[in-house]
Length: 323
Image 1 (cartoon, rainbow, N blue to C red):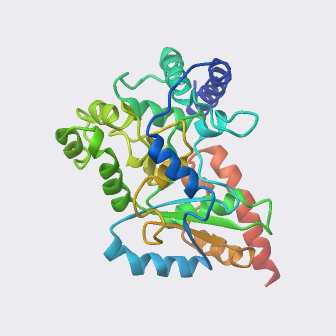
Image 2: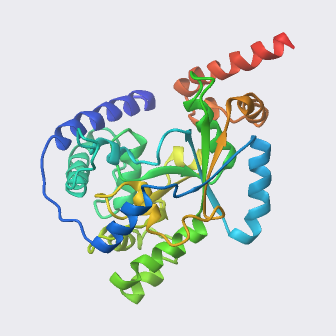
Image 3: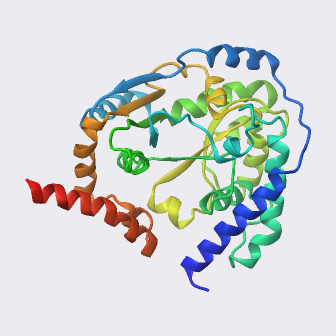
């Protein structure tokens, strides 16, 4: 079986068992009612800073803040979309509420994935390496709590433009999160519920031997709301090419944005910024990325990525022809 066939079969299987698992019920008791009340109030008002402009203006903003702020991670999507993981969207009730069984359903998804993934890939992650398993699931379309981000502003901008490619009058947005602040603020939230050795481990670069313990610290009891930047020690091809990183929410009974709001300082633009690219700025951004050779063909090596890239290439060449 070639790589393309393997990817397609595994993605189909991930979706199949996801449907069956998410139809099962489970009970889960939410904790931290005080934080829940705080997040509930915050969600009814603008909770993140927002700006608008061109890609060049966003690049200038990033350069101006990088030295003082630390590092940034980026995510591109339609401007009217909220920040939400695939598991969060899959666990929404008909009335829009997030299922209180989300954590239990995630465990069942992971268990089912582990039972059958060996049929499709030769190098199966160890059961204790939860983040590597979740990254593989995310890669092939299964719902997980992880939200895809990248260390590259330009790659995130590409994904924003790609999402809005068929709607030229739609605003797209690049979200910017200060990962240095995010990690420190998450450790502060976790401090009352984790030991000092555990907290020190969160500041250590991930290694293959400590990944299982890191997962227990972030995903274990007691459950509290936070967001923490993570990656498995062993990076798959897509994470490597796309300079990918995940932001991991701590409490799956809350939305990703509610978890992010649990971090002190989330309202400051140097920590979280939603930068909107209006339709008038999209063509210039597309041309800038084309010149940088950032496209579906380079971000998704293989025939599928090359074929998808032709849509952007044809539009670009057609506009050049008219000039």
